[in-house]
Length: 479
Image (cartoon, rainbow, N blue to C red; front, top):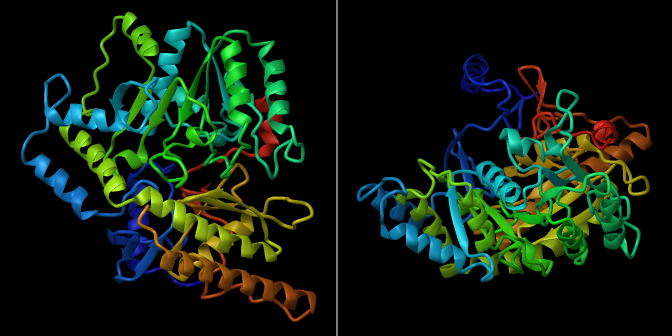
């Protein structure tokens, strides 16, 4: 195994001693010591440039000059809270609302995606007077007590499904229960109707229109219309979590819900909205906002909607528009998807799904079985990392290689990613051939072969999931 630099050993040991042990470290046991970033690149302690294919937080690029200048300038002018009047709050709100259909016309500013989703569920419950929540299997919506209830991706044997939560089947077109049925959306809706016969009082359905932590799941185009209808029949409202899929990332549409031709009652936005600054928002209809107000309890957020947060959000929207980053995601994403399809020739690649800068590669033990291969996915990630390219692993089985880079990612970067993945997959294919011929297999390439990750004795399959949701508990979670 490649020896870890002493400096990194010291940093890891410090974290073990003084930070919460459930804060995972990516790429362990060879974590990356980052010194600076720019555009779509990280630079490590040796000034080695690493291509960032995973950072959907630095949406318009790391250290974007316009963004940095705007925020720095605002820090020198004013930073207070939203109980006062200041121009940038109205300006940011107006620009954000311009991205939505007119029905969604009220904004509540917050700090994180978790906070926004928590607030959205509260709004839905207050508006409907109901408690029941429907979420998708394998979903993740945050780390607050309320959002953990609707995040099966995070559950394990120590966290049981809450009684008020109904888990709808994941509409995965590759591994979902009805993936091979032409009327799959109707069947998923039919199943949900049956589930709701036992849970008549539904407050809301919360879902990413395309599941991210759930494994880059892209439902069929009619899916949300079918499911939204079921929820509306029960008097519930529909919440679209756009924290990971929104802000032009898909290329074809600014928001994932637009791809499906639906208008949610509530939309949540985070991550990309601040490009690294903690800012999020809940966008809802006038009626839901009025219901929330009738409770008579002031909503105040110390940092939500402060001038810096609003400047960050306004700057991100300006950059997306002025630099045509949505168009870039559409063009480069289509180019990359074509290149990804070529990887299907490798036995480990079971499926390619996604669009724009939101794509995934499903790693399997064999194409015939479609059985997830999380160890192989982690190995590919580590091998690619050793070659200077950063990708992540996600999904309920931790076997999906995720691609969600800064929006400034270009065709040259796409070629680098594909060439690197191809090189690694060819190496693995050669190992398989040697094994079949009885010639032995080299277990280490560039000194690395690390199918497992542990920090403080805890298995961390990926930075987005600590004790990831496993299918062996799925049955018990749904009953």
